Image (tube, rainbow, N blue to C red; front, top):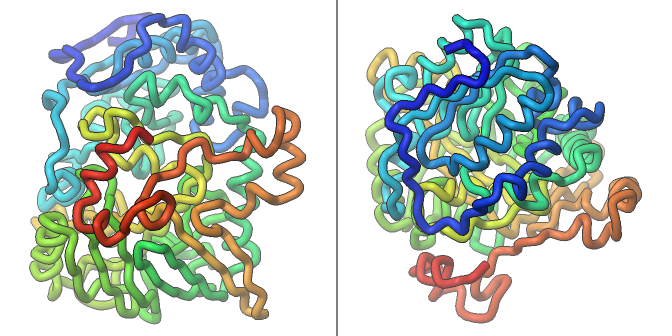
Length: 453
């Protein structure tokens, strides 16, 4: 297992559909070399620092499943080996690729058994994590997203399932620029906003407010931390939540992470907790059933009984992310991939990924997990304690992209208007495209699957 360039496969037949594949490895190598680049700015930049920190003689364990295009994996392994690393590959068997069904989000994320016995799609597989630890690898590359545990070795996710994901402007977006975008946006919350108020709206119907309670910033809780979650900036504090949590309003939309588009859903919150789920087709029906099942359960991370509390309003920060063309299929990564695009927010309601509350629930056979609703054209404002209102996102446009300092850095790489332009904007009838929103809201799948972008 530990020898140079060994490959350990477990039924490793690629199982993907509908993907416009690149067949020449050389076409992928510039992207892989950028990701693993030698430049200091890339080693310390936003996200995936483990790749660039690799040194000659480092031992890397790369673990993927059969929904990944092998050529993408091979490109990154080659780039790491060019740096002198010794790379071992483990490929596990995923289910045969297929179109999403309406309950995939629920089936993928929600659990009653311990997650280490039944890992979720984005989650690291425990035996692979144990293998990396036991054999003292310097870097584990594994998992598609979600929280990554603290380990004595470097541990990075690998979200690029397809060459379409990988061979894109998003992968080679300038790292110093992306760092500035993340930090400047995050400082609105971390430095300026604490103690203030947040208002989130979206033309699909979302209208939600909450307080940035100063206790979430005091360093004694698992709340806000000074270093941002790169590309996943937390507009609301993670768990545990305060007794005075006050997030109130409605969250609406037509997409989540890992399921087909669903009819318009309306999720009503009062003082942080979901009180009602309306619409959403089969997704909404399932969510409503889980809401009823857990309404009297007291989770250790929440001040009052119930599972579905607001903790995640995560802001994407990369303007070059595109919607996958094979979006109907599991191997596309689903709508989870596109939530990385700058200005898009995904709202998560439930327990924190691999948080202590999930360990408690799994050990006791109690339902846990969190469900999502995406916001494609949100407007988010932070009003400080002094009464100053700072716009974070304006109708889906991350405000810091128009900041003079950000534009100055972008100018090093070309026309800042082009460098900072969103290369993909969702086409929603009645909002960003011609047509009726009410018709779209009743059957968004017809519009999204029929659209070319």
